[in-house]
Image (cartoon, rainbow over all chains, first blue to last red; front, side):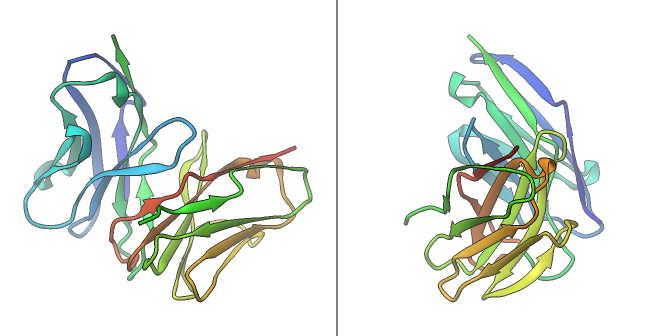
Length: 115
Length: 113
């Protein structure tokens, strides 16, 4: 069965600093991986996804993530944090038990950006 | 294209009542999935509908049910509400559902008193 672990429930960075949010997954077959962001009182917005092919994936708002099979990781990065990046971030893996759209989410990481 | 819409956005119910939540997917999307989000349990999958058929179901009691109409709009129903059902209920749509990108609505926040 697939699972996702996000390391660190809270991450705090200064504005302009590097953002690194960690995600490790467990999957017996090549996974489809996603990062979502959730702003207060809103739904989830897709930041980026990895399916197959290039392991470095670029997303919206300057975020990118690298799929590392050997480390079973899919960490999210952004070179320079902006105040508007403060939100909760979720890593997810697509369930592979059949042809369905079920996503399995990590517990989330709250990103705080300090001025 | 318009995004995923959910109604109502907020709801207050009392224990024992039932509730119906509605989700309109992005035009052309045939898959609708529902998730429950709580501070303690995080995001948990409820069920997925594709072309009016339930294709997958999460580990929730039978009080949680859903359906999908021919225009892909979906409803979920919770009967005999419990305090623990208080949560943000999120709906997501995708074209095929099969590991494709899912697009979420703003959610319905349900408070059970």
